[in-house]
Amino acid sequence: MRKLLFIAVLLVAFFGNAQDSIMTKISLKGRVYNIPTVITAANSLDDQQITDFSITSNILTLTLEDGGTQNVDLSQYLDNTDSQTVTDLSLSGNTLSITLSGGNTEMLDLSPIIPVADGSETIVTAGTNVTVTGSGTSGNPYVINSTASGSGTPDDDSVTPAKIANGDFGDFSVISNVASLDMGVVSTFELGDASVTQGKLANSAVNTDRVEDGSLWPIDLNISNTGTVGQVLSKSAANEFTWVDDQVGPGGSGSSKILDDTFTTDYTPVVADTFRLKYGKNLDSLVVSTPTGSYSDGDAITFVQDSIGDLYFDFKDIRKDVYYKTNNPGTIAMTHYTGTGWTFLCGDCSEYVPYTPPSNLYTLANAANPDNEVDATTGITVEGTDYLVTSEASPVSDGSFSIQFEKNTPAGTDASAEIQLSGLTVGVGHTITFDAYISTPGDANNSYVRTSGSVAADWSSTNQVEVNPDSDFVEYSFTSTPAVTNPRIQITTTTLAVNVQGLLLHIDNIRITETP
Image (cartoon, rainbow, N blue to C red; front, side, top):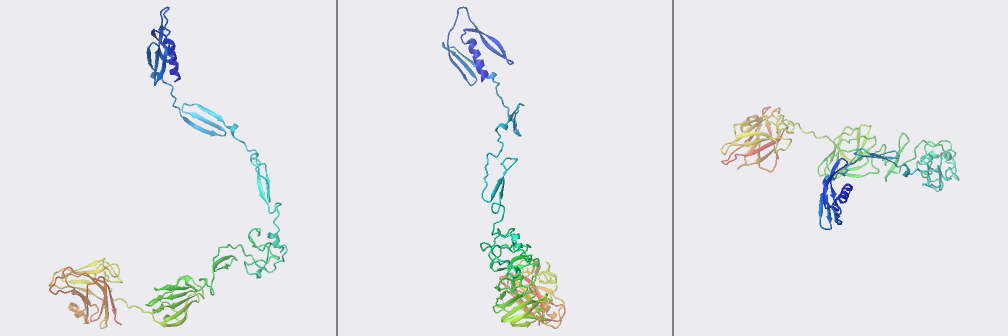
């Protein structure tokens, strides 16, 4: 902008009063400027005044009083922009550096404005039990120390190792028989204001420091107050005290008192049941299994029969080698014995022989065997083509699969299939038990599982049950006596002049046992 004003002034100076002029070239900093040069005739003067001298945007306007106006475009002379940026602003010690993109760098020493600590800004005054040394400078900073009574000696009512060593507790006599005191109780002695605090115990603990003649046990009495109501202090083999639940009985590890507890299903005792009353409550019998966990001899658990169902203990009394059960209403208190088992004290109980379920004689591996289940129809033969037999994952009554019998012929044709058995005892009655479900009944249900019909020759006594439509599996059972070791059972759906095509019969969980 300064260049524009300079150029404007030149223009005014050279042709502000001229009537005629020529252009004169002037070179300035490498640029050439055409400047009007005034040409005047002798004795020919023009004393007009400039009435307007202004710049709008980059246009310079000159106007004389008689109306002459001249405009000059100054855009081509604009070269005064400076777009430099700061490329570095850093502080090294007390010196600030500023560098521009054009390369110029200026350094500024800030030392005159940085204060130096000489201690005069801070004043620390000693108080009660406090001493202050130093001048507060970086070379000699303030050091504040506290003392027990301002002179570095403990208060008169404090308890220190030195006072414990010679039995000196001020106005009180020497404690000579500390070992006979209840541990953790110092209520019959007064120290100063009748209280013993950590502040009065020099190091917050009385450990191996001597009392009179050194008879104080090496026991850590610095016991935290973290116990809960009902807990007691327990001493370890290392003479350390901790808060534990109150222990009842020899080697007890149970609750702080005998508690009541009820169970309504078969139950396995745990360590937390020690010294508890356990009430078994169910209309049916309940089984109590061998306790789990670690027990000490003398640990006891008492069981009470609290309903009609008896309590059966499925482990033997280790002393008598027998099984026991309660008799309504009965009680059995069992105690851990000889480190390996339990012995019973009975209140209306009796011995019993555990029931052993008979072995399942149905051994073929297929979808209906509860003991050897596989996704297969092994051992099943269709008589003709009237049944489609498959292993299905749904519906099932046991395990993951069942066998489905689908009637795929219309009325007038019976559908039959045979299930092969093995390993039965000839001439001995056997109970045949299975679960069955008709999910799609068709127009009629005449479906049977039997030892008669086409398989009657395999049995010396025959029988059958009819499977009826229901909402889910139903257990069926009947007895027969085999005439051969490997007899067959027949599955059949008969027709009575009605359409039963599409019937779905499901068989699962087959069990064959000798009849007692």
